[in-house]
Image (cartoon, rainbow, N blue to C red; front, top):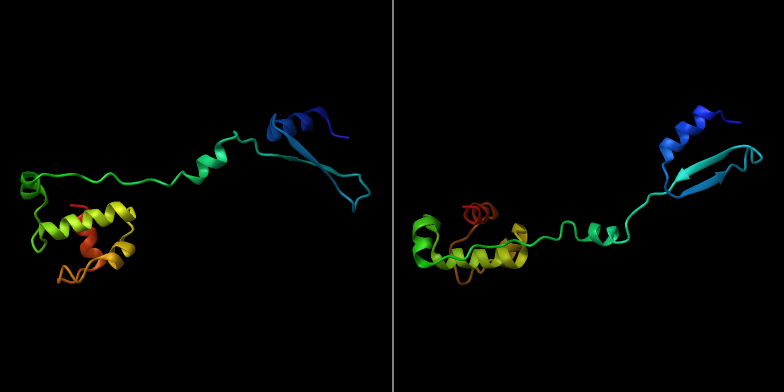
Length: 121
């Protein structure tokens, strides 16, 4: 039989949520364990699924903004626009962006690191 302090300690560990009692078959039912069940709000499972499902907001720029802020040596405006389009479609997954890079249209070969550097400028 457990004493009162042991019961208080057990209730503080388990909390006020639902509990499941487990009875040991090896000890002829002399040992009973109480397992606390996790309480979760009804929509928590849905929230956990979509926790990391984020999309990226890409900048929209004018000709003057491109010239002043986005001009990079070795990159054309068409390449930059194509890169930003791919970043938006594939949520900055650079191996996929590298795979979908239009090497027929843009003759310069680009590495994944080149794409990352230009995307984050």
